[in-house]
Length: 188
Image (cartoon, rainbow, N blue to C red; front, side):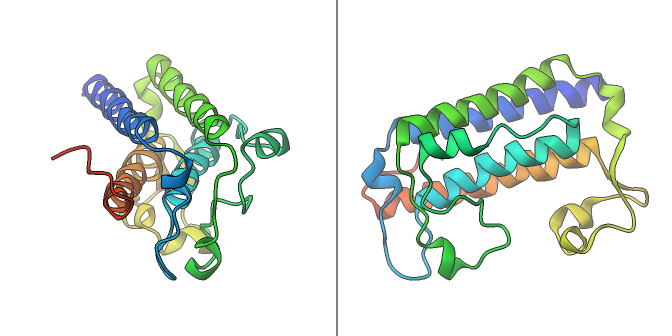
């Protein structure tokens, strides 16, 4: 059964990443940095937030350090060098990407690393607890806390909640926002 779960997760992550590649491949910097109005986050927020969260949450699952660092920031030039999870919408409405090509390179580096890890992962690792109960205050009110079993958040929970489901949520935001900048959705 664990082989089936791993195979499914590998295919779902690759499919989700392909949606992000399709999105960034059909937009330009003007689209992603478009300011619609107050309280409406730009596409730049969703793109960077999710990619940077996949990068950072990967560390909790695998122990590998995030890729994002000062060098990437100097290349990508995010207006706010933060994924924004702990910030308000009023702050993050100002998020912009400076160099879209460099961002796409960062995104591909993050996504490739995740897929490479999944390609060689031992499915027996799915049950390893990465955050034991009691969960930290920052996590205790999250969706992943609701999913977690009595022991805490496992590797499988982390991949499912922090990477896959979180990524689909933000892809939905991106597809909706594409309509605000004159582009269509990508899936039906």
